[in-house]
Amino acid sequence: MSSDIRDELDRLYEKIEWENPRANFTGRVVARVRWAKRAQRVSTTVTLIALALLGVFGFALGRGLTFSGALDYFTLVVNNVDLISSAADDFIAALGDVMPWTEILAVTLSIALIWTASALLPRWLVRYRSRHNEYSANNYSQ
Amino acid sequence: MSATYSDEELAKRFLKGDESAFEQLVTRYSKPVFNFALNFLGDADDADEAAQLTFVQVYQSLPRARLDAPLKPWIYQIARNKCIDLWRSRKGVLSLSARDEQATDESDPLDVDPTDPNPLPEELAERRDLQQLLRKTINALPEKYRIAATLRYVNELSFAEIARAMDVPENTAKTYFQRAKKILRKQLAQLR
Image (cartoon, rainbow over all chains, first blue to last red; front, side, top):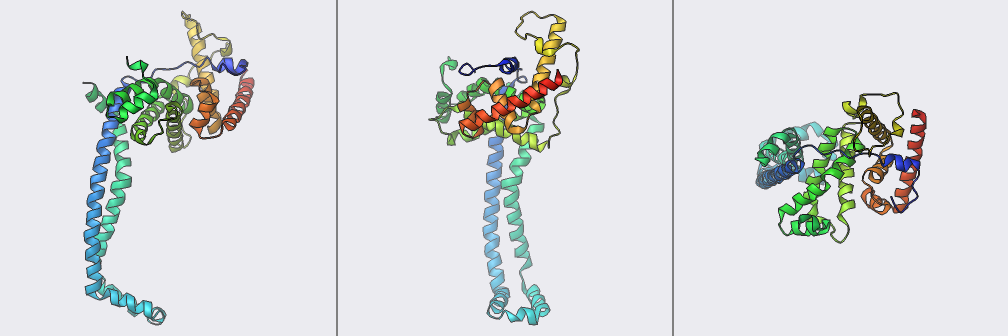
């Protein structure tokens, strides 16, 4: 503030006093950093597992689409778009019968697991950490 | 011994694997960051949380930080972001702590000298009132003015540092501060 002209208001607000942070602040931060590192490791591991699962189930889905004949239906509809408008119900019913639903479900769950592990899990762990902060800080200081 | 290291030297030591350098940074900045958060958020519990989250972020982001620039405004930039996140997550329901909301004295708190080393009980009460008043008025400012005023008055940053912490040009930081002062002056006039 010394380089500027200080007025009455500046002098008044310079009277704001500092308060001390809560006890063992550094210890609690270090404990939290360690927790964040662990949480990151868990998140990365689960994400990698989910990605591997997605690869396996994606491959299975591709095989399922090919061998069940569902892919032929898609080729058919690409080549003849009118089919949708003329016999939509029959087409959807036929497609529904041959679709590899188990593999589709597995792929969907894998994607959900990736999202949970990479986005939700870290956030949840941070919140959990926040609630258990005092406990871990005590452990750190011992 | 550790106090002789600059922030940037500590950061470099940390990046070379010295975890104690990070702890020294936390110890050095815990009080200023906590008080920035306290004056911004107006609540000690939230200030503690915001300050902790700030240092966790510092730890995680230091490997990507520019060490050719001063570290101080960067740390305040993170603190500012954490405070804003926390403030918004509470959707403005944060209020001054119960401690700050207590006690209204008939005397004018603006006349108190907080530097008195041996205050009388009534002087202590007046000093507390003054702190309450100053925090309350800063807390009532719009977000960007509150940040500028807090960084200037509480943390005594230069305008160049405030500009870096707020990620705005220096003249904009000065404008924010001047507007904050205008509002503070108006608030105080209404209180008198």
